Image 1: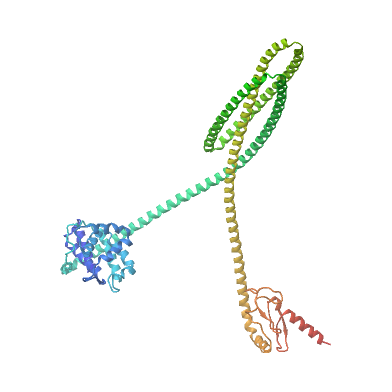
Image 2: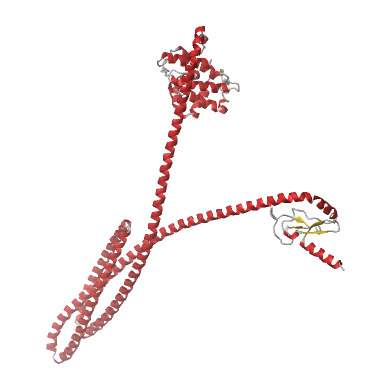
Length: 590
């Protein structure tokens, strides 16, 4: 009936020539027949109220097996007028026919017979080969265009009765049947070929897309590998250059620092010597002139003011150092390229040149101060002469003392100013040295970063080397396995040859066993090494019993044969027994 309903629906639809509605009788009969086919052999589900037997359960499985059927299942569940599972199943069949995928959906069900066994008995139509035949016939329905309104129909209360009168044909129809058989066969073949074409086109398009994606990914990977190799080479070259440049910069900075330290120490020593001479001069003048105590107190007050000013200057310098530290931090953050490092090194070199020029100027100032001290010593000597003369004429000395005091104050003020200038210069030198130390620290940090990158690259190279070693080890193991395989093949060949020889030597062995019944034979399992050469037994190095002593030896240590008293025929004997037997034979001879 399924075959008749499907063929009748196709023929009537082709003769009708329009889209089919839900009122079309052959279409209604087709759905009734499909319901009977799906209900055949359904297992009865027990519930609390009654027994349940519906086809909606197996149709819901299609969503899990065929992802495109999820839209049909969702739309069927969203229909407001459907209340029973049978109504949902009827709506599902109508939507599948409109989509022209009923054959695909039911094919997925028939393939999964393990899942269908939960819903159908073993003798059901869907579990037999006839179900596959019906699904194959459903492919022809893809020719039909149907436009069915599922919302307005009362699918829950419909009665599925097959109208057999539609399929009973007259004699005239039987005559026309032979004419239409060829047309139907051609249409079936055409539909089948179109379906195959569609499936093949979909598979070809998917394969082309996969091939394109794989080619793109392959090209991208090749480009990335090439870029990575070039970057590694460039980084290695830059690393070598930076190491050489950093070594040169460190050498230069160490030399300049040593020179500046020596100059600063010499300046401090000269300053101490000059200050000691001035202190001695000041003490002598204090002894001579008591009136200068008041002036000294004033000078001390001024010095205290200067010390306070000096402390303020130091605080300002600390603030400036903090600002400098912050600026240096920002510079460290911004210094990402090597060109900036080179520019900073050039600036440092210029500053060092400027400091050398400043040191030269300071040396000149010190020379001038020494000249002034010499002049002061000469003036002091003149003062001593004047003091000697002053004893003679006190009135003149007092006038001269006043003038001398004025001159001395001016000179003293000038000396104090010069000392303060020197102290400022020393502070400037100290700040320059601190700045240079900080720059040196930053350079060391950069060197450490570069060392870290070099260590990382070395680790990567070591990993590559280990991988190469592992690959070589695997190759060696492969070669060893090949050698073992060749040795085993040789051993098997030898075994085959020896088996052919063993048939001939069975009688000899039996006779030797009769003779050696009184001896103690070692078991094969206990012997693992040859007693003479102490080499381990293997497939190629087999075990052999000595027929004289009963112990086990290898082939090389027991390849001799001699006739024993127990057996007239020559039998396998070990080398030691062979030597003993030959000696006995030679001693027995006249």
